[in-house]
Image: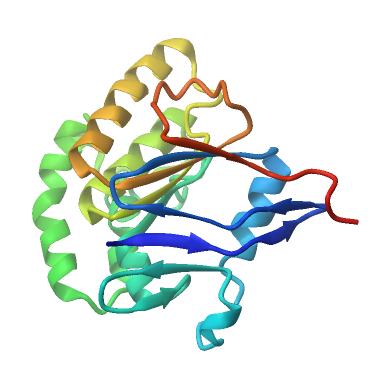
Length: 216
């Protein structure tokens, strides 16, 4: 069993109940955008060497548990953040390979380099891999995030409203690619959204929400 767990915690003035997402599961977490950023940022500010009983977010496997921010956590867990898939000063190739460049896992780096041409062709960006990213559309940010997931092959993916703000024709294209990638990876998906009617088109086994007004 591989799963990501989090403790009950205060997010701004509201309370987020404890929960978990296992590989193969699909759950939605509904909260306002400002709460999303507050929660996501809070998950990774703890010192990696803090005691397990104080961890807010962690990865559990059959072998051991790993705190958010650790190298094993980032090998197993990926994220697709709202319109934040690319760094403008890097090339498309560098953006896709970014998760592997600071890891000590050379085997994973070599495998990603081998898989990159096929992934780029699938995403229809093979002719611009060496172009500088510069300022790109939300659709392109989403493509790069999908490409990283295909290269990384994570067990769990945190997805933050990636469909919101796309032009209608781009939304259809992205939705098709997104669903195909998620089906191929069979990863656990925690879809963080501002609404239960997010337009992702996915079927969720459970929908979690903030408990509002329960904290001072």
